[in-house]
Amino acid sequence: MMDNDLNLPSKEETEASVQIFKAFGNETRYKILYLLFEKQLTVNEITKAIGMTQSAVSHQLKILRQTGLVSSTRDGQHVYYTLADNHIIMIFKQVKEHINED
Image (cartoon, rainbow, N blue to C red):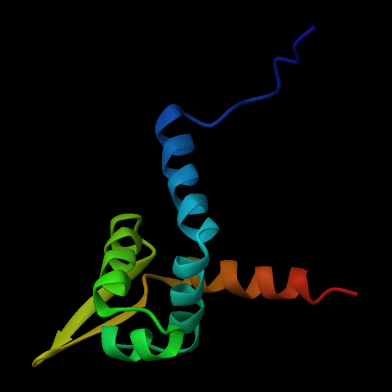
């Protein structure tokens, strides 16, 4: 017997949520997000920190921008990447708290 009080999210909400979890589920993208949790960075700074090619980092940043997790701003010739909003910061804080629980 099904309980009529149970509700599933809409198809659109489910798809968007799954895409966000997929972005977090990739080790390289997680490292990039973690770095951006600390401060805004350029592609070159991210590349040096995680030891990947600029093209590989740029590809991952594109995915992160498409999922709305990362935003970018241009300052002259430099493009700075940052977490898109406080929701992403809260996710990181909660994951860190969860991992460090006794």
